[in-house]
Image (cartoon, rainbow, N blue to C red):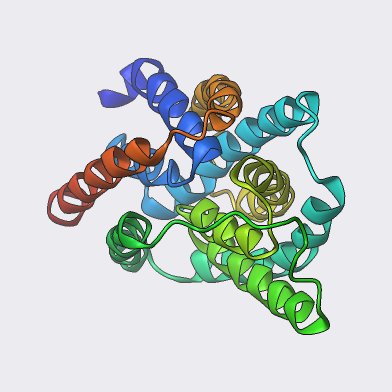
Length: 250
């Protein structure tokens, strides 16, 4: 059984995904298919993946705090509407069937991957440049929608958050720090909901989490280098390959 080799498979995959998630985003596009390939129903894989995300972001928050680049006030402020949205998104993920979720996952894998590959790079601006009331309302609604998406599938939510943080003038390093803080808060709620419905395999989740924790620490260090555009391109190709295999092979 593949499950007998879960440690050998999930730890290195979690490590790579942890790096990707912290540096840019999209690591769950690797871990979710792997969990499904290991035999988990798609909905259980979706819940189990949150264990690794929580552990990864606990470590990443600590790492960014040590480097004194975490904007706590913004991270917590964005987490409020995102957490509200995550409750709705998680409910939706539990309501759809496994086959429907798998098809939605593949669609999102391709769309988000192509978007991150083709979208223009955000220009760095001064912090909190957009502080008008309309910008505040727009960001609140934006993070509410981010929460819905993150609660539903999680994969690729980092790209959406980095787009939003660039809108308020955060550079890539501080934007990533806010991202991991926000994701940590709403993923704790999402994981709790999945767990309450029995949709979490804790053994596989903790093995995955050990890898994502180590990868997250590496990602914190790599973030300061700002040299991750090539990572996004490599990840995009890998994600599309996973999507094709998942669509036809599961």
